[in-house]
Image (tube, rainbow, N blue to C red; front, side):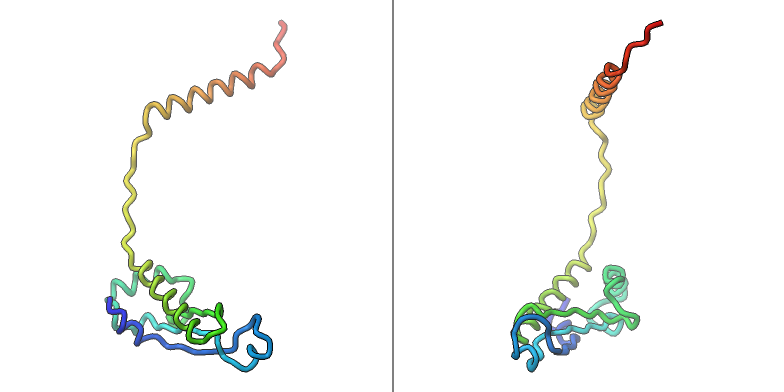
Length: 134
């Protein structure tokens, strides 16, 4: 994956951020919004695009655009760096191959222990009952 080419496909928009900052927050656009169109990307193959679409299924809008935002910092530059880093981590996680789960056999000792505990519990509860006098 070519990170520089991927970064060139990103679009940023800066809007006014909410939160602390007083008068400063009302005049500075420090919130960073990252836009990435997955379907028009030339960095990924068709298989990778399908895998990423499945990974981002709840995050993509109707046009297939991924939108990430960051308004943690009061600095526009810092917010842009944070949202870009987050995006790259998400892409990396989305392309990761999932390991196949290997089924294991339950050890005989574990089964035996479970059954003995079950028997003891049953006897304990049976001893609480009033005895039948016939």
